[in-house]
Amino acid sequence: MKIQSTSPYRGDGTRLFPGGDGLFDNYTSLCYNSFLMTAAEAPESHGRQRRFVAPADGLPDLGEKGDPYAPIVAAFKLQGVNDLKPDTIRQIRERTTSGLELVRTLAAAEILREGRTPKKDAFFVEYGALGVLRREKRTDANSKAFRVRQLRKKLVAEFSVDEDMMGGLVRGLRIDLFYTPAPQLGTAFTTNFRGTVASFLKDFGKYNDGQKADAISRRWNRAKTVRNFYGILFSQPKAVTAAWAPYEMEPICTLARNRLDHHSPITPFDRMVLEGINGNRSDRVIISKIRADIGITVPRQVVNYWRALLMGRITIGAQKTDQSNLKTQAPATGSNHPEF
Image (tube, rainbow, N blue to C red; front, side, top):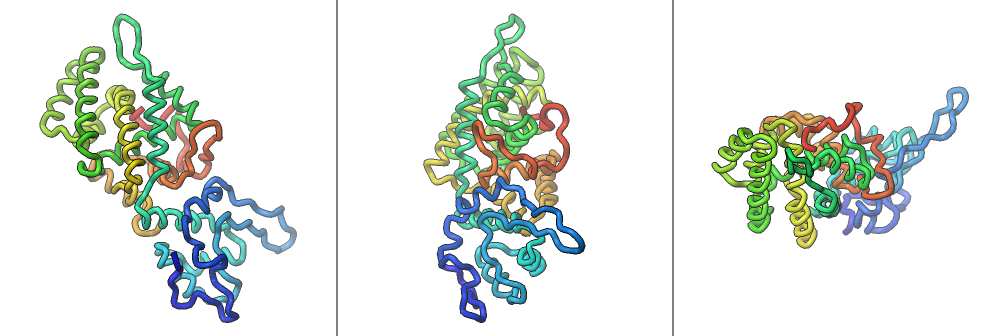
């Protein structure tokens, strides 16, 4: 892909973006390591000398002090970065900021251009498969329901995230499904999902709360769509939303595998969240829209977690995910999110 700019060269004939016309090709993988880095500063300087910040991995050359800003702003705008300010360029040139946010904005812009989110789908294939493998039902006389708390702890350990992040990702998953149009989900998934809901309501009514299960069933029977079910679920107490988690894992795994087979098309919620990093809509606007559409108020870190998942910053397995830049408030004991 060529960088189209009215002036891709400086006055001395050198390129604004060294490395050839393919600099932005596959930008997400190029910048992957920078997602997990923390900007490192040089040792404390003496007197009035400035402290210099190391540039983020994958940061393009933005020129030297005195070079014009306009060609760089124009070139980045063609790549989908709509809010690059001259002050940001100046600070990066002077090494008073690492440029990490710009690297992440470029990665988000590339995902929006390509319209694919394979990292999210790969995560939920593993989440669903492990969940089905690890879930187990209680064996006491009073209940045969799934052991939700034990399942959550097992998944938190295997995914190397804390309970707050796991709860936030599950909430993000359900918001994503609420916003995804039925044709994008597919007929096979919807049919399978309806059967899973029927099993859940039957078990919940038998082992947990018959009246609550009947009330949900009446609302569900009005429109047996994925959107309607999650709209109902979001209005329920944690006893219901947590009990549903082990049931949804199998259809989620199937859906994620199918999406990977079809190049992981971006969803409306994915697009909403990625646009939030690029100045097109703020996180506050995203949270307000969710509240208006679904009737719930989500913490800002749910948006942060989902964005990080889309860009490959949340890992699976032994390597602990760096969560230092994802949290916007201290988590309470256990999960802040009632989903799981």
